[in-house]
Amino acid sequence: MVPLGVSGEVKDISGGKFRVSDTVAYLNASGKQVEVKLKQSWPVRVPRRVLRKLPPEIPLVTGQRVVDTFFPPVAKGGTAAVPGPFGSGKTVIQHQLAKWADADIVVYIGCGERGNEMTEILTTFPELTDPKTRRPLMERTILIANTSNMPVAAREASIYTGITIAEYYRDMGYDIALMADSTSRWAEALREISGRLEEMPGEEGYPAYLGRRISEFYERAGNAQVIADEERYGSITIVGAVSPPGGDISEPVSQNTLRVTRVFWALDASLASRRHFPSINWLNSYSLYRNDLRKWFDTNLAPDFNLIYSEAMGTLQKEAELQEVVQLVGYDALPEREKAVLDTARMIREDFLQQSAFDEVDQYCSLRKQYLMLKAIMKMGRAQTEAIEKGAQMRQLQSLPVREKISRMKEVREEDFEKYYSELEKEIEEEVRPPLAEAV
Image (cartoon, rainbow, N blue to C red; front, side, top):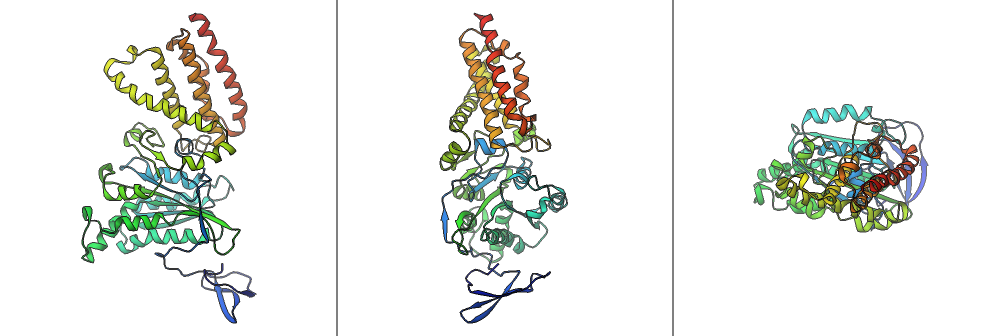
């Protein structure tokens, strides 16, 4: 609670209930008496200092399969950009991260959003239950509401206010997840203020210093050793939503954001229209934290996790290539081996990547369950390929009872999944064999 830059001996501490403006303690700092209050004043545009920044080596676990397995959101203290057109699910995925992310405190900034959308957040968040403590989620959430009908100066300051609050709690040793929705509205406020100041406009009317302002904001993220205590560590993870006009990410805000963030979740309106959520396009998205986190996954999850991920991603990329062939010649004209690739990719998409935010069991998936689910799907895919090489047909394999069990994996509770996976593994080995014998 001692302000940054102040040190000394505690002379007196008061007890009871206080307002934030009340003095709660006195320090003897080099012969001077310093009052300590429940609030601290800090210029929001100036970053709070840390002892040193640490490399990103621990993932922020979110419980969302497409994020944790395919694009590790970020190491704790990292940055992510979520650009997408209207209706693609930016706010929904940020709500999921706010509820399930492995963070001590969540700071949610509604910057320039519609009033009814912020009203919904302010009414629904207090009703949500924290899955870890079973207490109201609002107890560890800070909401900064700045709707589109508020002054542009307030909109421009809301982003800085949120990151400064996050730094305040980081200095206490907490892990913070900051959701900024959306930085495009903040950039529009910068453009409007710049125009009123009669500054020289840059690309598309944005100020020439837009890129610097965006990078300064994201650079305040990080995993750090704090000044107050050399043994205390805290982190700030920033997930910024970008709303490019018409979904065109070639515009300046998206491009400047992608230049400084290391994770890109490409939201796809076509996936959202097909009710595939989270609507993150697995072929266009990327994460530059994967190599940094590889050691953590190998040590804490499974040594073959990265190999299974690479195999699954390769299958999805192969599916994208085959879809062009299917459109020309039709599915029935494909060789059986390529039909097996399409079938495995369909299982990955529908039985793994698709996740319901409204299902009590499926809304959160632990890393262990994610690993076993993907391992089961890839095991089934390899078994199908081997069966086809020995003469089996895809129509035989598609009628196996084990396929229904694979599709129901997401409905199995965490505590029962280890046993479920063991049974599933045996059934894959047993059921894929009869079609082989029959074919031979």
